[in-house]
Image (tube, rainbow, N blue to C red; front, top):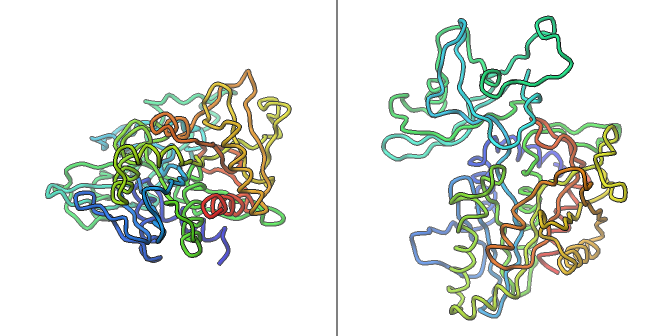
Length: 415
């Protein structure tokens, strides 16, 4: 099966951050990685290790010659995507319809969520503390208002009044659907973390099958590319550095959580691994000083209908290779040293690269890169595949760019 179809399978298996973390873990286990119990003694035995914390997953490969003199080579990404998160009391009735109360999660392009069959997916916790992964399938929809009833050229849905999906014209409850899918009783549900996702499967398209359309590629594009790169690197790496894949949750809402890049999860993995390799506090600081991080998140491809939104000297395009992202105001963590580090790795792998810097009149987004660099003091570069329709319910990337990103990450790890 091709990389693109494997990637589409990964997206289909990952309708929520919780599903993405577990799908990464499933593939790691198949490759021989061992799950680390955070409440047990930490292992730095040679081989692959991983842990899941909420919707985040950390994986690390310890080579046989690793020691307190090693460094950490980190690739960071995030498992979450914009969507519509179900409110704690989700069921309500209005005008003969059973609907689902949601709040907008992250910077979703609201108009793209209309007229799509939506699934509700995520984590359900029962009263006995058991955690269940749930995907309802296509049971929700946000229907547009007919143009005959909406005589305006500009579509501006009210986030509270107009963004509530319909479920059924009969009396119904999304929690009944969730409970049935999980094989539990509704009254046993204690709490949940559920979000909507486009139920349609991703697709390869274009005259040369050069594009991929799918939901959640910001940032499953980087999660999957780093997973493939780590699994490949683990089979051939003979160096001394510890290879780390950090897929955080909650990036789309600022990263400030137990599972986010502003939380302790990555530092916990690095510190405990370093100490298990024999490092004291001073040696840990030295390990950090030798370390580096590639923050991998989606980048903006030039849009031919809105080319003026881009800096005229920087027009990265789908099919041109991974993008190195630079921002003088530190919205990205890249600097000259780390740009050279990343682009040298890509050159070794024969991977073309592009660069992005924002138009001065257009606000710039940010990533886990500056957060990681600030928290840990580790040299960091921001990169990603060029994308159109970012934060849409269905985004667009290039097949070649996805492959190249994975190859570049592998070269960074093994080079």
